[in-house]
Length: 91
Image (cartoon, rainbow, N blue to C red):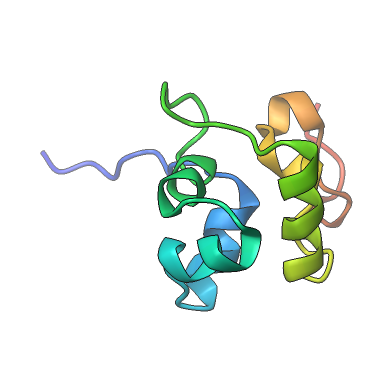
């Protein structure tokens, strides 16, 4: 029987890159990090190789994305809380 797998949750930066068809090497230059670092920032929550950028890189990410990706977007929803546009959590 075919089943649909659970969606993989990733940091918002991964979605931001995907919707703009940007690749890690291009973004890495603008963030002054390696392409591998960008790839690791975008891995799914819970992946053992995933990393959270430091404060200086976070500031550059926020500037590059014009505030669309911020520090809280690098943490899973159960830690950061729900996004305001998602509405209230179900009881």
